[in-house]
Length: 290
Image (cartoon, rainbow, N blue to C red):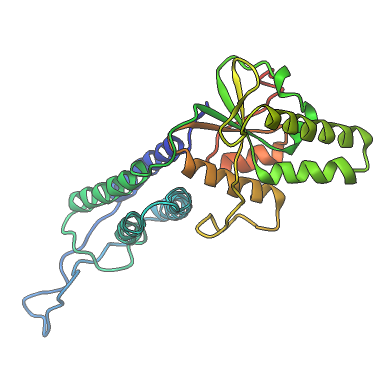
């Protein structure tokens, strides 16, 4: 299903919420370390988490890794937000991580208190995600990778049933420019040349940054967005062309937070990467675009 990156991220956060509440229900908090016979009084968190069962420790590890992953996606999405929004997002992460790890003393007297605190902190992080404002939406956005242009470089032939914006990234146009000259396969060189020639023709009709109408249902855009890796998930490799493409997609998601976005690709590896990065994807052949 094609949806906005924001919505996709929030849906994953809600799934994480359910698992975290399950972990907390399996958890227990001991009595205060401060007793009447204590020779000193600990000022601060004073209650220990009890040892988890083996099964619950497995869930704990899964939840910890999932939350770290969601934090990276969230930070990538809010990268263009105001500093105070980023600070709020980070501030709420620390107590949530402490509740996941359960290795420090806690303020909470009961599990119900811990659950309420967790829910409040996660709600505040979702508020930050919902506060991201970018450009007005440009409708449904389809971002093709290089192999889509090679499969069919003629956008006017695409059989798309809904109005949409097809957005060509600089990384893809640059790769097509190289392929039209350097690829050993003549058919690939020809398709890349056609894609570049078509783009120049669309530019002749109008400003591609504002969008040029190709058919009644397709508007073609280019964007001046080069991939930036600062603030992006650490598993993106700046030397990998697929990861550079995905880094640019994060920029698009932040620029158009309310637009439904899908990556167009025929490449199974890119489909897997898109799925991992929380971007919906479409295979144009399976969707019968051409």
